[in-house]
Amino acid sequence: MQKTFAMAALLAASCGAQAASDADLAAIRAQIDEMKKTYEQRIAALEQKLVQAESQASSQAKSEKSAPAPAPAESRQSVATANAFNPEVSLILQGQYRNAKNVPGRGITGFVPGGEGLNARGFSVDETELVLAANIDPYWRGQVIVAMADGQANIEEAWFQSLAIGQGVGLKAGRFRSGIGYLNEQHPHMWDFADAPLMYQAMFGEDASYVQDGVQLKWLAPTSLFVEVGAEVGRGANFPGTDRNNNGTGGGALHVHVGDDVGVANSWRAGASWLKTRASERSSDFVDISGATAQGAFAGDSTTWLADFVWKWAPNGNSAHQNFKFQSEYFVREEKGGLSCVGACVDSSYKTNQSGWYAQGVYQFTPQWRAGLRYEQLDSGTRDFGANAANLVVDSYRPKKASAMVDYSWSEFSRVRLQVAQDKSMFGITDNQLTLQYVMSLGAHGAHKF
Image 1 (tube, rainbow, N blue to C red):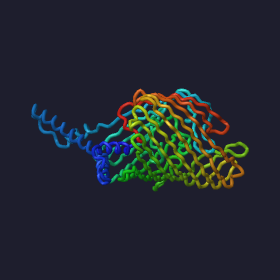
Image 2 (cartoon, rainbow, N blue to C red; image 1 turned 90 degrees about the vertical axis):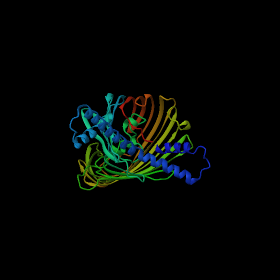
Image 3 (cartoon, rainbow, N blue to C red; image 1 turned 45 degrees about the vertical axis):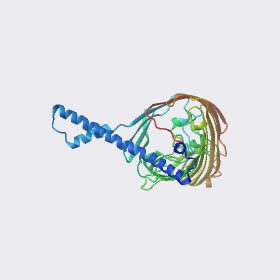
Image 4 (cartoon, rainbow, N blue to C red; image 1 turned 30 degrees about the vertical axis):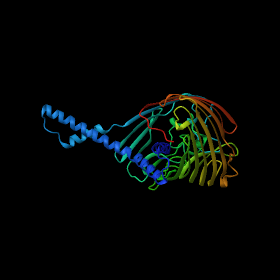
């Protein structure tokens, strides 16, 4: 977390001046924040100057040797521009062996999302991610992530963000992972377990993350306490919303995160988020009282509230050899609208109120070895089918799952993980699972968030 580095720099700067006033400390903090905000801009400017100087030196040397006619200005500019494009390139390789029960149409009892992808067993290659990122100029930075699996390639993220607005303001536009919650912004190779918590699968379906096509605005407050506020508007086409193909926005989000250091060894972050989307003809299957399947299509509003908390510990603030991380998230979702039904049901109103949470702890006891535990539980809550209340089965169930993992990392770029889990996310089924996973990172890879 940036706050951790800022506090470390502050302690170093204050050696020999422990009696400094609050005003002096505030001034030092402000200087550190300003340096962090502008360093990428300065580096980009220096890189451009270096490219221009090298290009000019090369042209002068050739001119002195053969005395050719000077090249047009636009030609020199195009050469410099081509040389200046030097993006960070990385490739994430992921795969696994999974031993689990064969459950067709695997899903979570009482919750709409599901998918055969969650039922993959045996050996498999997970998504391979190709990442390209670079500073566009001193004012903007861009990144694209292409996810490739089974002969298909999808643009997982493609955005640009500001570098020089100042005053703690940051702007991002394009396709990006929403800033809601804690785990949502993290890609699968950053997870501490081989799979996403049931909570994220219930909220966002098989992909277990909410991706937005739109605009995000963040503000970092100039305070000693870490305070970050964000707002987003966008297409809202992903679950729990649907693509309505209109001129307006289909989804919006608000999120706030605060954090601080506790002494040298501890740091924490807490947050609250709100997500609002709208669905149109969102299909799902229900079961009537005779056991037959009834097909429904939901149209209405979906509102989700999230709370997240993270605590990190490392001796003397050095996490390279030993550290511990605890994280937990909780969500509540309410949906209201209408249900168009085909089968043993009729069109009616539809309303749900559901919730869930997870908590996990991961302990790195040597530079290479880590171990962790995770427990999670959902509540299918209330589901009001209106006029269909007497025809459709209302699943009242609390899915749960317990997982344990141990992983080994040769370096920050290579990791293998063994995970065992007891999955009771489907009524009447206890699935004892074993997963052996690898995660390999090639090329430049930016630091992970707090």
